[in-house]
Amino acid sequence: MSGPGARGFVLSLSGMSHPGSRPDRVMTAGQTPRSRSRSRAGACVAAGLALALGPTAALPSAAGSSVTTSATVEILRPAGVIGLQELSNAQGFLASPDSAAAAEGGAPLAAGPIAPPPSGGALAAAIAISGAPNQTFSLVVTDTLVVVTETGELVVTSFDHNAGDNPTIGGDGAARIAIGATTQSGSPETLQQLSTNAGGGGADGAAQAPSIVAVTVQTAEGPQTVRIQRPDAFGPTIFGEKFFTVLVSYN
Amino acid sequence: MIRFRFPFPRHCAAVRLAAALVLSAPLVDALAAAAVPGWGAARAQTVNITEQRSLEFGKVATSSIPGTVTISASGGKSVTGGVIDLGKNHREAEFRITGPRDALVIVTLPTMATVSGGGGTGTLTNFTMDRSNPIDLGRRGRSEISVGATLNLGTHLPGADYTGSFTVYVDLQ
Image 1: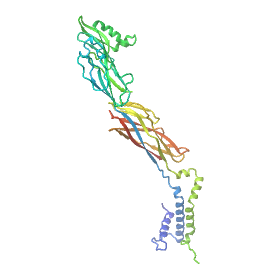
Image 2 (image 1 turned 180 degrees about the horizontal axis):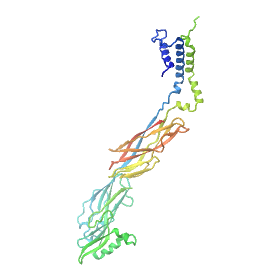
Image 3 (image 1 turned 90 degrees about the vertical axis):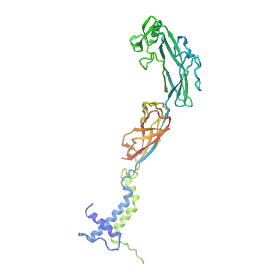
Image 4 (image 1 turned 120 degrees about the horizontal axis):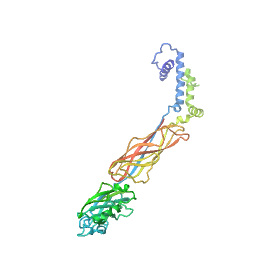
């Protein structure tokens, strides 16, 4: 600020702060008693205006606000699958055509410890599923497993489980599922028939081609090439493997 | 007879005027409020924000692959990566802002927050709201906003109820 107004304001305040005392400021050049009086009067009015309008015309306070809220999420324990017991027909895994449906005949396991395989008897596979209590889940087991035996016989195994249509994890966060199997076997002469039956899906041969694999089988008449359905969509083939897959996912 | 003598006779008029102004402040305010549009709003320059409902992501499961679960400002839920959506009562957060009528306010969302539970943690990012700054409070001096966010989750998080908090700020523009 500059100019007479500003200068007078300072002088008047100084004089009024100590009425009757010796002035602590000397009058500067150009100031007269009349101008001092005007300055003090102006200061009084300005002070009055400031006091009157101060609370009203103060600059906007721009008082902001904040709120803290919560964020929640319920995370379920991931589903886990543990193999408890292998599928067995007690004569070697799917070794003999005579063992057809033997594993399926093994009683599905109930809750409780897994019993050791009985001597000479068939036994269903067992898996344990851990996860969120009372959570429903989907269970997918490998549809079929194809094994060619040393004698050239083809064994096709279909799996099934006892979890039902709407499997649910128990209140303790665990479920135990039994998996059985039904086997079908055939001589080399029946292989073509099996592959034909397994082709599925419509009359378009080209559309079926990716699911069909060629297999060379040693027979009494020499090597023969047959075509069978790819047993597992997750890999090129599990021909000859002796594993099956269990997929568990929450609904 | 004692005669009162004003200590500053030469300034008597000015002091009286100043005193009158001080004493008449309420009157001045009332007159100004009636004559100047928005005078009252200018005096009450405060804005407030309150929570109407919190942010909930519902139920999910994690897996061997990290992923995210997102609640949009409109309340939609989506998951990415290995996170499995299991539904259950997800919803966006909602806030109410009040302030001067026709005021414009700026809402500031957090950039990151954390939820934790059961020994695991998740990170909240990408907060969004259904309005754009500045927000007009309108004639009622009030507005509601919805806020969503993305929850980043790691692998195989232990099952538990995870909770966290975040702060939303509002200021006059």
